[in-house]
Every structure is written in C-alpha cells, then in structure tokens.
Length: 483
Image (cartoon, rainbow, N blue to C red; front, side, top):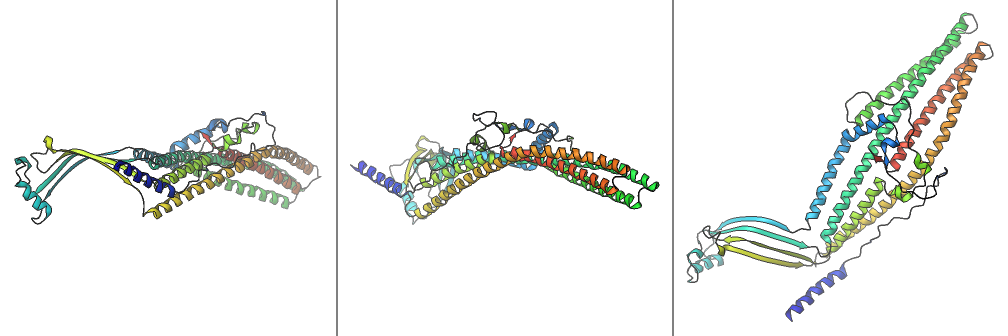
C-alpha cells in the first residue's frame, strides 16, 4: 500500500508539471514557392528537372580563372579562418553527444581531521575505541583521524523528456548551419575573385581600344598636318587633333592605374604579396544552359547555402525551445560510487574497506518556474524569429534569381545591338576621312566620328563586363558551385 502511494505521489508531480508546461510552435514550413521563374526564352523540356549544383570549371569555362579560384580556396585567410570555426562547431557537437552518456570520474581523496573533544565526532570516536565490539584495526586515531578514498563515481541524468537529446539536435543543426556558412563564404569568395578577374579583362580591352584609337587619331593628325602645309587646313585643326590625342593619352594612363589597383585587390584575395595576374584576352562564354531548362524552383532555392543555413538554424532554435520546455518536467538523476574507504593506511586495501553506494533523485521545479518560463519564452521567440528569417531568405533568393535570369536574357540582345553600332561607326570614321580629303567634310566631323566610335567601343566593353558580372551574380544566386 505504501508503494502504491509513492507511485501516486510521483504521478501527481509529473501531471502537475506537465499541465503547466507551455506549448511549442512546431511550424517550420515556409510559404510555397512558385513553380517557375516565367522566363521569356522557350524551354527545351516540359518536365521539371532537379537542379544539379554547378562546377566552376564548367560554368566559367576559363582555365586561367579556374587556377585563380583554386588558389583562393587554398590561400585566402578569411576562408581558412572559417575552416577552423567549422572544427570548433564540430567540437561543440561532440560535447552535446557526450552529455547523453553517464559521467564516470576516478576519485582519490585523502584528508586528516582533528575533532574537538566536545563535538559529536570527537566524543563518538573516543567511545568507539573503548567498545569491545571492535578489533585493533578498527580503532580510530583520535589525534588526527584520516579519511581515505580511492574509487570511481558515476552520475547520469536520465533524458526522459528529451532535454539533452534536443540540445544535441540543436548542436548538430548548428554544425550543419556552419557547414552551409562555409559554402556561402566560398561562393562569395569565388564570386569576388571572378568579378575582379573580369574587371581586369575589361580594363585590358579598354586599354587596347585606346591604343588603337590613338593610332587612328595619329593618322588623322598626319592628314590634317599635311593639309595645313599646303594651305588646305588651319593651325586650329592641328591643335584640336593634338588636344584630342593628349586627352586619350591621359585617359589611358588613368586606365593603367586602375589595372594596377585591381590586380592588387585580386592578389589580396589570393593571400599573396604581389605579382602579376595571368588572364585571358577576352570574356569567355559562361554556363547559361540553365536558361534552356525547366528546373524545379524548389530544387534550386533550397540548395542555396544561405537558405540551407537559415533552415538548419531554424531547426536548431526549435530544438532549443523543446529543451527549454523539458525544464518544466521533473529531472531524474542516478548515480553512485564504489571504492576503498578507510580511516587508516594499514587497512586501506582490506576487503572490509570496500564501500559502495547507489543514489537516485527526482527533482521537480516549483519556486523557480518564473525563471524557466522566461527562458522558454525567449527560446520560443527565437524560433519564431528564425522562421521569419528563413522565410525572408527564401523570398530574397527567389526574387534575386528571377531578376538575374531575366537580366541575363536581356544582355544577349543588348550586346548584339551594340556590336552593330560599332560596325556602323567604323564605316562613319572611314567615310569622314574620305570626305575630308575630297573637301566634303571638315576636321570637326572627323573628330566627332572618332569620338563616337571610341565611346561606342568603350560602352561595348562595359556591357560585356556587366554581362560577365551578371553571370557571376547568377552563379551566386544558383548557390555557387564546387571548385
């Protein structure tokens, strides 16, 4: 009957704490994504395809750029620091796993106590030594009473309500989140390297344009100078052409400075002190097959490292909230010890000195529930914040990718029109020279024709650069790739 009453009391404690435990919002799902990005280009397939993560060598298709990307991964300090943080996160995960196991400690204690004559221990030891029920080994040293212990102690918190297992889950999810953070950093690093690389190519092309244009200007200057010598042109025309040439030389010099600064910025990302950057002479076509596919939006968005990182953090905060809720329930602790315990060195390893104890305790929160409620409230709100952040990451990812796909489509047409514009302006330059020699055009028309051609060629390179930058952004928006 007494045992039944104990069970009733225990059940009452559990029921009382269970009724007072708040509920958790287990909604971890974001709003459903649209089925497609509504691209203008006709798809080659009507069936949705699963997105396959990109590879840098097949996406950028530039061997020199690929070498720089590999070097950045091997040498960039920020990336190497992130790798060390991944190891720290893994260590936290191992600690959380070990918390589920019993703890075993090897204990060696030695102490000596002199008890006062007017204390219970002092009087008890004095009387014990006069007892006829003890032998010589059991007599106590009254001047200094030793207490020796050598053995093991074990303790274990039974994870009945999932507090420890949820902490382990939270640590595991944060480890996964840190791995996705590593992917995100890698994607940003490779994108920054590619951006600077393409900028260098654009600057090289613009430098070549200035060089060629200067040759054209020089030819025009020679023509005007010859015309002046025979009285068919004025000194004003010669000085105008000289001024134009010097303007081109000044802009070319500024361009060389930009090339040097861009190289230094790229070398910094590579973790190198100095040197020259090997690069291609032209923009190589990027990997745009994604525009011709009808890929599942879910398979792209949810494979992005920023979305995956936010999702794992959401699951971690959910596990935190569950662990905080488990604090409302009673805690069952089990433990014990076993070893040799004696008050004299001579009897320390005797069979009679062997001692052991089993312990068990049930602890239920009563007066500290206010603190537990606040801790749960904070954990639950953090989970709700993580859900909002997760949803915001998905929304941003979708709109960013949709805009970039449309932008990439548009640049194809822009480049075609600008290329035709340059062809027409080249003809205009040739015609202006012929007309000037035949007396049907003045020197200002030659200058304007050459200016227009120079500006169109520079604009064309700018658009090529923007197109390349768009492909880099598309690489990031598609979740990066494997280097």
